[in-house]
Every structure is written in structure tokens, then in C-alpha cells.
Length: 542
Image 1 (cartoon, rainbow, N blue to C red):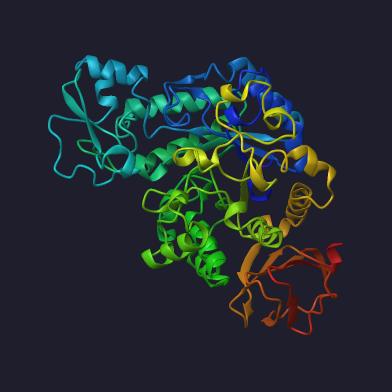
Image 2 (image 1 turned 90 degrees about the vertical axis):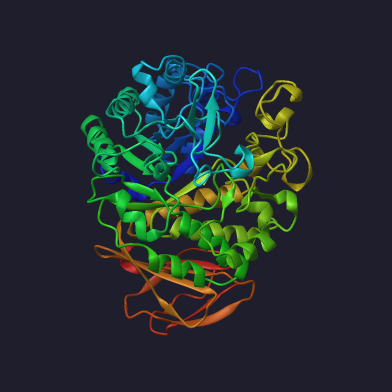
């Protein structure tokens, strides 16, 4: 048992229904994931975050839960899930699952009881109003899809109910102690099945006062309750929260090391894309400086792309437009008023040097790296699919039928697989990249290996090293007797720059975009290729 395992972890995010189909019905399933668990272990992944696999009408990719205690029958059952946990444990992989409790599906038993019986205890599980409030739509998310409204009329209840997201996803009344008790019961169930924690969906939205909802005391007390309960039942389980807020508010969700363990750093994510668009490291340095000082059991989770749109709402309007103009120049590449619905590789024009630099940055920033299925191959998107589905295409395993994802007829696939162009499965797949020593997949495997070896990144203290070139990000890490220096060049031009680092210990290159002249700690000068990167380590560690 290692209670701080997440500080040196590599998290791999996947959606079961598009990962691997074992039955030939066109839909990925848990057995298919089990069959591929050694692939993930071979890459060096030691934690898998699985997106919702609960019983659901699937009107929002599983984030509309109908029953928290059942598995979507298309994907398997509880027996299959237990087998998955065992299979993952055998190869040293932990399982995180989504805890989606800001809202449920309209088809959930709680809501069905609430809408038909005003005297049911479940009526107070949701947020109701006799009249449509004047501030309707003030906190509407995905406004273009839900009619700019937070309230929907229910004919059975003869009342309006509150929803943050889609109208078919009524928000739970988190201020109700009985609701909180039910959430704890859900957590208890899955912890007993052997998972290592939860990714908490839409965390900030859970604690806003909505309509008649009123919290008694600190709304975030529930996160303390989650933490306490989780650690009682699995001392090394973690809570990873989806919190898209300004960094100055991160501390509210960490508490005194007694709320969540980890937060997704959306501000850093936005800053990385601004830096990539500008070809300058300045936005990333700014984001690092805005990070609050984290304590031993607090950590950020870094990512480049996730299963949603690239939400740029943490940027100013000018910055957002600059990123969009570079990476989503065509209208159908954009979504809502703030986002991009593309994968990283197409955004970077499949430039291998630039892709390597971006992922090298991801794996060497302070915090835990999170990658999404297919990113290790450089998979692309399908802009012919609607909305967010453009980046939710099936995994590309080989160059055979349906990319090895499924033996079903292509018309029966849960979602079309990318089949055309440079990102099509005939040109881009696991099998081919496995056989190519220079493939992105094999590069990623090496990068993960070095990231886990350099424990000073995971466990050490970091600081920004001063450099005289705006294109360069330089970081140092120190942990016990270990020291590491990490350099990245965001520009296409080869540069030589000076830096300010006082340590005179002999340092050796560990990982980089090419073989460089041996590092001289006394010269205070360094050369980097265009989009170059260098990981350098104290010689005494070798």
C-alpha cells in the first residue's frame, strides 16, 4: 500500500463502449477492456480512469445515470467488473471510476418517484419551483443545446425542476442529508468492489445554491465526508475532482488536506494551448506562478485533451480567439462559444516534433499526467460526427476490419471509426506502431518509463528557472538527493539560451528530442532544436 501512489502515477482515460468489442455486436465492453489490460500495462500505465459505465439511457455518453448500482447491460455486468478489477490488479493497474452525482437521468427511480408523488421523500431529492424563476439560464452550461435555460417544466409534478446541463439531467439537491447519504452508499458499493477512487464529475456545480436549495454551513463539507469515508474503506483511494475554476479557488476544494486529493488543472490546460499558439512559454510560466502552494497530499492532474471539447473559458476573449484562429480555423471545428472539438494531433498538423514536445511537457509538469485512449497513437477526430462525438471515436487496434475494434458490420458500430486520410485506421493503429521502433506509441512508452523513473518530478519540489528566451520553459525538481532539470522550446526555431541555475553537480541527459552535447552545468548555456526538449538529471543518481 502506498498512500501517495498518485504522485508518481500515469492515468489513462477511456470509455468502455469505444475501446474494444469482444462480442462482435459493435459496442465495446468490459471483457474487451480486460483483453487489452496488458497493452496498458506494457505502456507503463498504472491507473485507468473509466468513464461512466452505469445503467443509462445514454443520451449524454453515460453521464445521465439511471441506476448507480448496475452496469450498462451493453457493456457487461457486475461480474465482469469484478473480473476487470482483478485483471488490472494483477498487472499493477488501479481503477478510478466516475462519480456523477450533480445530476441523474430523468429515468432514475428517484426522479420518477419525485415527479409523480409530492409526498414522496424523493421529491426533495431534486430542486423544484412553482414558477419559472426570473434568473432562468444564469448558470446554464451547454447553452446552445439546452435553450439557455436552467429550468424545465414537468407535467406530472406540475412544477419546474432545475438542471445545470441537459433538461433530461435534473440536478440533485445536494443540501438534502438523505441525498448525501445515498451518494455515500454508492461510493461504499464501488469501493467494496476494489476500485482505487473516484473522478468527481462537475464538482463546483454540486455546491452552488440553486433555486430553493439551501446548505446548512459549508457546502463543501460533503467533500470532507467523501474523503473521510473513502479513506476508512480504502486508505490509499483518491478523489480526483473536475474543477474548472480560477486557481485562486483551488484551495477551497483541497481544504486542509481533508477534501479532494487531486484537481484537474483546466487553467494550465488552457495556458498550454495559448503557449502552443503563440510559440512562447510565457503563458505556461504564468500558469505555474498562479498555482497555490500545494501540501504533501495535494496534487494537480494535467491533461492536453479530454473527452469533451477543449474548453477555453479560462482565457480572455482575445486569448481564446487567438487559440481558436490557430487550432480551429474552420467553423465546424468549433463548439459552443468557448471550445474546439478536435484532437491534439490534427490541431498540431501531425507534426511529430511538436507532438513530442507537447507530451514531454505534459509528462514533466508538476502534477500527475492524464492521457486519453488513442493519444498514444496520435489519433484524429471525425468532424462529420455531431458535437463532442467528434473526439469519441473507437480505438484503432490494427489495419483490419473496423480497425480491430469490432467484428460487427460497420453500420452496427456504436460510433464510426476514423477510416479516411492520414488518421484513418489503415495508416494509424496499435499493431503497426508496435512494430515500428520510431512510432509515437513506442516514444510514449519510453516517455512514461522515464517519467516514472524520475521520481523527483512526482515527489519533489519544483521551481521555474530563469531563462533569457520567451520560448523556453525551464523547471528544476529536487527530492532528497535527486535533482532534475527539464527544458522545452515552444518555438519552431533552434535556439541557444542562457539560464540561471546555481547547482554545480554534474548532470547527464536522460531523455530528449535528439542527442545533444553533454550538459555543462558551469556554462549556464543550452541549445535546443525547434520544438526541442531535454530532461537532465544529477549524475550521482545513475
